Image (cartoon, rainbow, N blue to C red; front, side, top):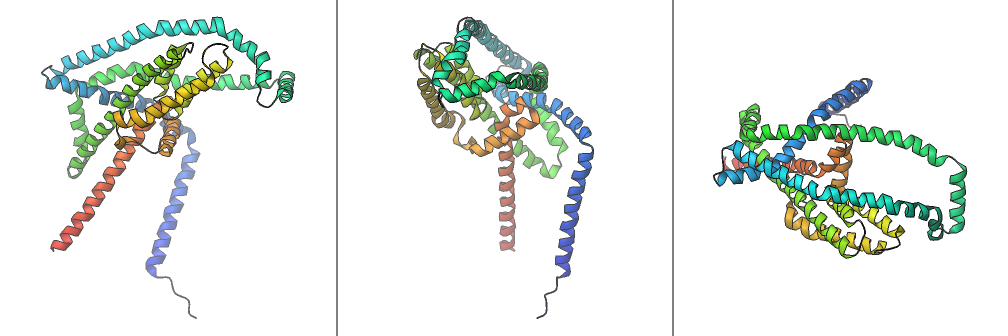
Length: 373
């Protein structure tokens, strides 16, 4: 039986795909040879991108307020911007003025009154509560005391922790310092900058780019404003509930719930761990089951009532997408990437949906033209 010959078209396609594959691996190989150079480029991009992204995301929260004031006749732009800026700074200052002394007081009381209780529990009481029994505890305790595993672990962990904090905090602090300056200039010339960006785009794509930019601003702005509101509301609710159940240091734990809410899914877990551990060790106050129940209730209310009501179903994303975006953007931009992983992922989804819509419209237009002809 005669074998079927490969056509010239199929052979050319195979050669083309092989060439593309070889070129792809060749580019990767060359890039690996200059890893230091690419790391330097990536660090430079991160240095610029972090404050710019912070200014952009913050403008999406603030700019609607400025536009509202202008519609009410409060102008020019510099005056309305000054009002919003002064009000924002005043609210932040008032919040810090009220919260910081009380938080410092609670932390001071914790170190003065409860640290020794925790140390005593770890040395004695933990043996009786050890889940695997006292015999296993004695074996583990003997192994730990007779070896230098703790000291060696701390010796290796502390420098890495300091380096990680330094790498994350320094860019974050510099971004926070630059944020007001970038934000003022960006908000003053908001329309001018948007027009300059559109002018770079070819004329045939200008309409699509303007529509895509409007969708991104509306979607991400709604998400960010909702998240800020949720952070404040959940922090207040958690503080009140913690106080009602008699939890000591309720203000610190409540503020922690509000702050960590900016990290989807993981934030609620992070906020629940400290009060649960504390109530497990503490001799007075609510038990860990009560605190766990409170946090689970808050998480349920936040995910099923507050999120759909304040942010909307159209902005919700699958948990797997959120987790992947946290890992990806966190590895790129550090702590800032973790905080803004959700809006960045939402931006990518808006871009993808916009591309699909335009592709579908193009198909329908082509089909309609074919039918008419």
